[in-house]
Length: 95
Image (cartoon, rainbow, N blue to C red; front, top):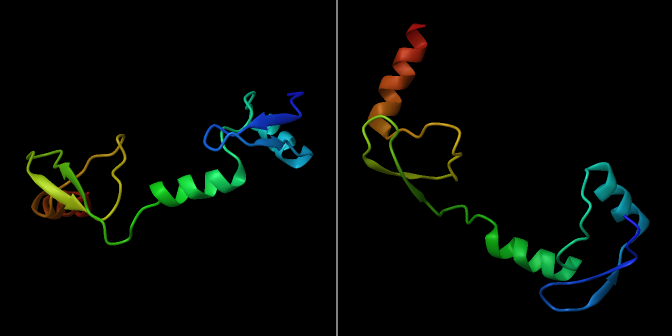
């Protein structure tokens, strides 16, 4: 990546791409410059960061009942309601 400067998509300011940042992007196979300046990135991160007391709603993978979760569920792992979790946990303990 030979780019010296990039423009923030949010505020439109032009920023210089420092060598350490460029090296990090190249090491991780990123050919695109950053989308946001450090200030806008911090603001965006604050907007999407999880609120500790916030609950997510998901359907139980076994019975389909709606359940509330204190975490963001991962699509590759099943989600269980409290009753199915106890059954699943008991089944795993027997193995």
